[in-house]
Image 1 (tube, rainbow, N blue to C red):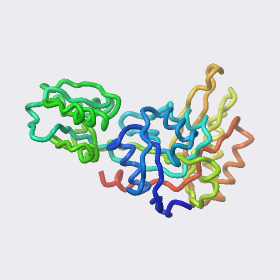
Image 2: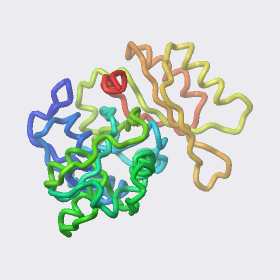
Image 3: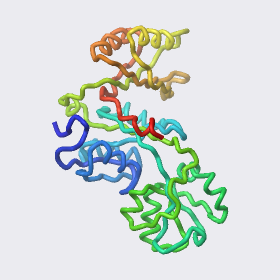
Image 4: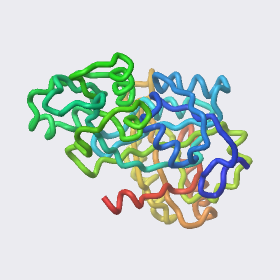
Length: 292
C-alpha cells in the first residue's frame, strides 16, 4: 500500500488536479498526501478524468461541494460514469487573498482578476474598494500566474497564500472572503482495482441509485437506512438523461461498524435500481470546520 493510515504518501505520487500550482486543489492534495507529490494539472474536470483513465496520474483530487456555492453537480456524473472510486475526502477552508507584483499598494491597483466564484465570495471587500474593476478568470491561481507572467502593474489577483508563494506575489489584503465559514469538500479518487487492495478502515460510503416512479419510494429507502443506524450526511439528486423526470440519487452514509453498513446495503438493494458504490472510505478531518 502506498499511503500511510493518515493518507500521507510514502513515495512520490502523481496527483491529477483541476487548476495550476497554488490552486485549492493542490492545497487539498497536500493536506491528504503530504508534499511528496507531482501534479498533473488539468484545465477542467473532464480532462482530469480523462487523464486518470489514460494513466497520466495515479490519484485524482476533485472538489464536490462548497458551503457557500453549493454542489458541483457535473462532478457527480463524471464520477458515476467512471471506473474510479472514492478512497478519502478532504475538508478545506477557503481563504481568499488579494495579491499583486511586489512593491505596490492596494490603492494603486485598478483591476482584480480571479475565478468568478472567488470574486462573488469577496463582495464585501470589493464594496469597500470600489476602485477595483473585477475581471473573471478561469482559475484563482491561474490569475496570479498570469499577472506574474505578464508583469502587470496595477493588476491584482484573488488566490490562495500558496499561489502567492509559488509565483512571488505580495499579499496586499488577506482573508477577504465575505463568509469566513467557507469550506470545500474534496474527494480523493483511485481506480477500482487498486482501491480494492487497500485496507481503508471505512466508516463512510458514497452510493448512487435510481428509483421507479412510486409514491414513497425514496422515503422507504431513508427509513430503511435509518433503521439500520446509518447517518445520512448528504443526499443529491441528478436527472437521468433520456428518461424525463427520473433521477439518480447520490447519498453519503456514515456508520460506526462496517458490518452494520453491509446489512443496510443488503436491505436497500431490492428497493433500488442501478445501485453503484462510489467509494467506501474513512471520514475526512473536520477540525478546521469546528475551529472556524
